[in-house]
Amino acid sequence: MRHVLFPVLFLLLMVVAAHAGDATAASFGADPFINELRFGGLLHDPGSPENGTGPDFNAEILFAKPWGTDAQWWLPRPNLGTTLNFGGGTSTVYAGVAWQYAVTQRIFIEGTFGGSLNNGDDKAPGRSDLGCRGLFRESASLGFDLTAHWRVMATIEHNSNAGLCDSNRGLTNYGARIGYKF
Image 1: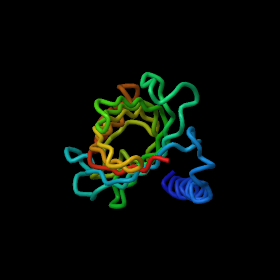
Image 2: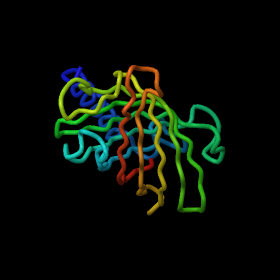
Image 3: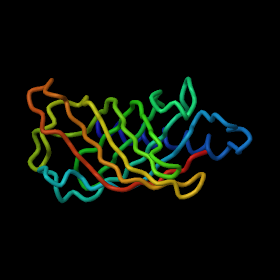
């Protein structure tokens, strides 16, 4: 699975980059298909057997709400992303939905829920026993809008099978990300 996961992610990011590169502000309009791109670094589950595999790179795409407006915070928007560990630890791809609430004009909180797939190896020494490849994923962020387009956020993400598989070690990463809103 590891050999399939990374080329698929690379192709997905290339398609998104090509779409974003061809788009102008006018073509995105007030309700773009791709609403926001995010990138950042996360500390890889410091309490796990994989501690010391180095930081993770996180990339995420948030899409426009399929219905409603941004003012309707209770209506989620779809998201798609990946958290990659290049030091031999577990990497994931994920999809789900995100709810964002503006605390003030510049400060926001966000919660997400969805599913993830991982390239974990439960039998290898030094690897986390996640129990299965398909997991639930949830995350929380506290963010600050720097400008109308740029934002920064502190994020924590957790992947777990909720006790549906033989073991359920889980994987929790946290760190900082930067986002660009179209």
